[in-house]
Length: 289
Image (cartoon, rainbow, N blue to C red; front, side, top):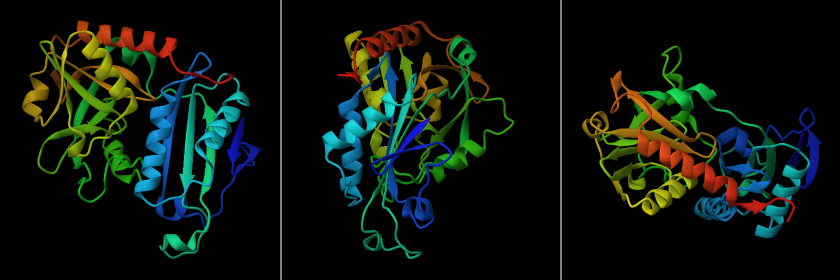
């Protein structure tokens, strides 16, 4: 494995950053996780757009132009044959033990390309089991969820609740009790021909895979809405599924020990999964272009 660190490629064993990097000390940085399908990078422009928008929001200057950053990522993929997933990371860089970002003169840029499998294949066939978390989603007024930052402690605390529970994912509610998102994925429900997903204003990330699925559902003639939903809506949905770059599209069959619909992956969800894989396999930016 070859890992990109500030313009140099290192083996997995030799790739290192400073203990004074503020990405490590304070979670001060941003990242993107991007899929690779058949030698093509999935939704490259939306991912890079979001990375630079996150950087702009937290006043983090990426020390590479857009084209330079993309080429660094593409070269990382080329050097790691068979990679399915690439992680772009930009930290605030090396500073001192104080919090002040101005003490960090230059950002650190990392790129890792590898395989990824968040869930076993059988879960996609039988369906995901989900439980509502007691941990609440961070308030968006305090930390804008549109920034894909390195500080994932809220998500980690949610994931810790899933230990030894026999469920696959956890569902965050807001402090007001509205459904938000999962620990690592966006959340969708289906009622009739209506596709519903929590509004990003609640604290849900505006996911790239989420956006693709919404576009595909519109092409299927479905009514697509971003709204404010409670567990009552969730428990009474006909179908439900989750989406994410790493997770792709996963059918949900049970939430809080309540079957969703018939308790098996639903027909509309299955069609969306089929259409998503067709889209992923036939689009994207070639690595070797």
